[in-house]
Image (cartoon, rainbow, N blue to C red):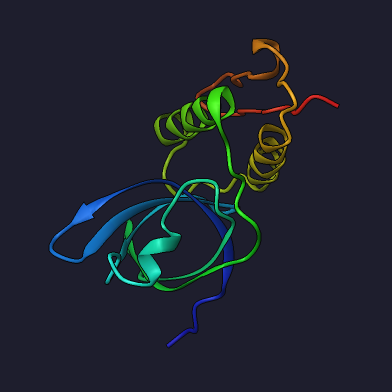
Length: 146
């Protein structure tokens, strides 16, 4: 049996699942992934918040994975006011626009830079910076201001 490889991730959305678990939507360099996190209301559940850089091990071959391990891999971007609303809106857009498990490593990097820019209070460029590629391929690009 193959050992799962740790990969960077951010929580886009989570919701309660059964008594102590959670369904978690993660953004990874390999795309948007949905997974079940067991014992989410315990110690591990405290990491299931948006804007926290994580390192996760995902198990399973189907569309719904299981989180084998989840650790913080950096300092969370604490967003306030308009930056918080922008970050939550960004997460909502990614949830709705990204197909499941389609790799976008550049998008993951832009997301990380965008969170850093929001946390630093830097304004983002207007809508010209968010663009969609044609032919059904999502090419979302988020640009922090220089």
